[in-house]
View 1 (cartoon, each protein chain N blue to C red):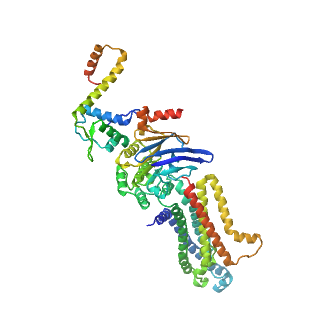
View 2: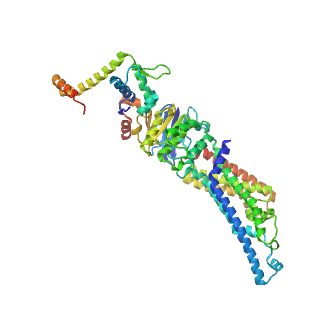
View 3: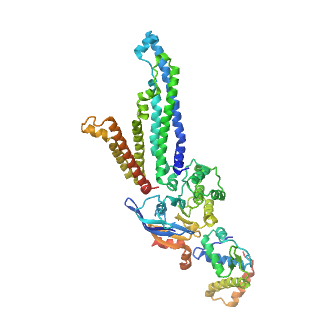
Length: 123
Length: 229
Length: 278
């Protein structure tokens, strides 16, 4: 597991986002067991309390579920899992739009460029 | 909790610490940051009863330091503290003789974790290995609080990683850790709390995650603001 | 095992190699001395008898008989004792300073032991005291052996036979180390202990106040010395002659020694507990 954290956003939110990405691309699937807080702290080299906070946040958002004395698992709630994917896509699209809007490109031209670029293999 | 209240210390006429107050909680990693010579090490020594101070109160879990506190709190300086002629095994024997809480099993576990051998002689250890042995001995006494002076400076990167690994592993459990450093870069994500010291005074005390959430600032951002002010 | 005993054991172990070397120096040099001095006496006697055409009786009449004191008064005997004494006096300082200086700062560990700092202090003092007693004990054991060797080399007709006890009392060094009476024995070793405690306090003053502490330490040592020898000085200055009976003098000295020791211990403890800095 490799994440490059930035130092200005809360680390626990960056961890949550990392999990969302993993869910969205299917690396983490419904009901899958995930590492303990301590293991995660070790893997990501972050403070164990921060890892704990990230898990708490994910529990609150319904991304993971934890039963007493058992390892946490990714939720099996399809609605939440699907919304994660949507959320990430929407977020990316919004930030793309925010950066492109000041240039005043006509929508058609923009869509054409996006579809061309998107179908090219990544460099 | 370690509570430092209005700690003041002088060397002759020079004030080394002036009204230093802060707290360090159990289960958290608190970091004393400041450029060299601002009184970080002296503060740790004062907490441990290793240097006298003029005034102020220091409480460890609501009690002043006594000889039995040394089973609960330990200080790890950035140099070897066992006699050079000892092997690691001798050093373990010595510790076992004096500390009721010495945990041999944990000492062995850590020795393996750090890939060190009992027959190594203290005199032959590199600076990185000395830091590891010092940390090992602190953890094997089973203390509640570990005070470490510059655990990450002047040692090789692999030793640094191993020591950082201890901080994130089960080995640290819910101990309270205070470390001093003049370089925050590598450990920004390891620490809970920052105490910024300058000229023997506390300039700022904050939790790193709170600082990021509420102000969008990294530790270095805060240091820049404070020291340039 | 009690933690004080463990500390004491640790202190003695740390000095054991140098201590063993000191013992070796004493044993080797003194035995060489016995051989060299005895032979040179025998050769000297032979030569004188030859040169002067003396008989044995004439030689003894003119030169007197040889005694083992001949050897005890030589450098071979006193030299190694002086070396050992110097080493131990040096070690009174080293036993503290080695904790601070050198690559490894053991004083951190020592002061962070969950034991009373009294134990640390007394372990060091006791280690030195025991090492002194050990050397004296070895010397007592060596004397009869050296005497045997002397008797083996010098023919019986040429020598006086003295009991070991008398040999001890005939020499200034050995009679100081092993005095004739119990009271004197107490006084000598008490004075020794007092000196150790006083130096310890001076060292701890330096460790607490650095440069100022050195001055303080010197003044303190001088004050203790003046206090201890005041029963000698005051009557002399006031021209009172032998003011005290010898027994009174001894008892008085013992009391002063006890007071000075107690004072040094209390100050030393205060410094070690509150003032000393790593």
